Amino acid sequence: MTIFTPSQRRVFVAPLALLVAALIAIAVACGGDPAAEPEAPSPTPQPTEVTAPAVTATAIAPATPTLQPPAPESNTQSPPVAPELQQTGSWINSEPFTLANMQDENRVVLIDFWTYTCINCIRTLPHLRAWHDKYADSGLVILGVHTPEFEFEHDYDNVVEAVEKFDLKYPIVQDNDFGTWQAFGNRYWPTKYLIDHNGRVLYMHFGEGAYEETEQQIRGALSAAGYDVSGVALSTIPEPAIIESAKNRTGDEAQTRELYAGYERNYGAIMAQIQPPYVRHVEYYEKPDAVVMYQDPGDHQNHFLYLNGLWLNAAESITHARETRDFEDWVSLVFFGASVNVVMSPGAEEGSSDIRPYEVRIFLDDAPIPNARAGKDIMYDADGNSYVSVSESRMYFLIDQADFGGGELRLTSNSSDFSVFAFTFGSYDGGEPGNES
Image 1: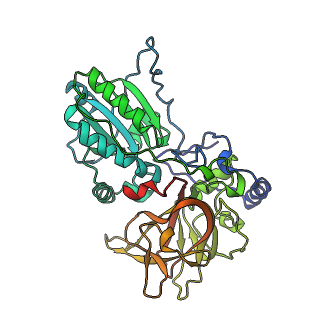
Image 2: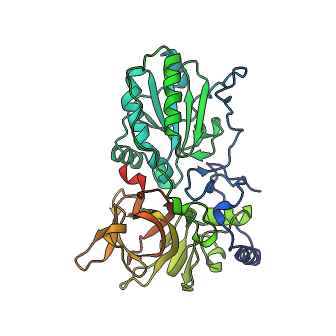
Image 3: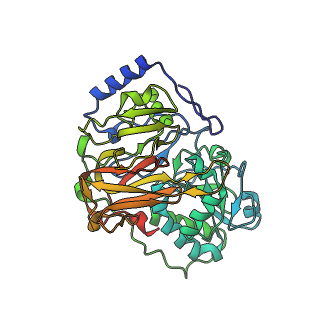
């Protein structure tokens, strides 16, 4: 299997007959539960789901074996030494430093691998903010290592804007070349590594959750370093719970898997043969970087994207390939969950920093999204139509409802800049916890 590297974004280009055969074979198997398929190594940086019904981390194949710290109850095995930061880029909220510097200062370091459009990362931010506020004066340094998933996440200004939006005060370093990611042999967004004052990895956690456990590990590491945290109260931020009715769902009524629009991840899914690709049109796979006219078949199944009209299939996204007048081109999907989010990007003048914002009209079951089910980015025009204004390259919140349920979404814009990268979903009791980040 061909493996992507961060600096070599290779494209799988197979003969049409092979792709069609693969899609036919996949279609036969689509009655199963995609999220229940076993995890397998995937082309770097191809993300895959790791759990259901709530996706808790996004994975890419490691360049080296992941660190394996000893279990907390083990007293015989020494924790591994943390690798040094590698190929670091620009820093935010801090002057550059090394882990060796932190060891010299008797500091405990919590490394958080994240990227700013990742909903799983966004959901963890309230806890990171709380830990920074409480323990920064007691020896803890949180270091957000920003390892990008999409090309626009390499942009320093975009990362700065996200850091300000999320009100992050701790140090952030860009990891655009995946140097530190590879040094740690990391696989997931988000992942946290707790490094003690001796430079050893005491604890790690992949994905969301385990916030109380992580905080207890932080307190133990700080106490071992000689800091007194007895007067610091444990966090009271509740850990989100999965809706009971979302558990044990399979097949077409399971929480929708993460859906990617770009051909890199769609071709990668075909080559890996672990789960079906995301776009449900054979013609999408005939040629990369091609403008294709699609016809929506009208019979939609959970876990897939459907297109209508003229679209460019790009490496990371699909982009509307013409200007229209009556919203006749669209992206549609059936979903199950309590929340739906989408990553989109505005247009840009070539060679210029000027952006071209646009509006995307959103339909739920052929009607405007009811206010009670609307995510925080949904707005309404004078006629009651629900829409999103795309003026930043980021994740947008579309659906946020209290209960687990299903529906059919249609996103449409007359703009030729309309670009869709990925959809993510959640099944948390009370709706999308990322709304609070």
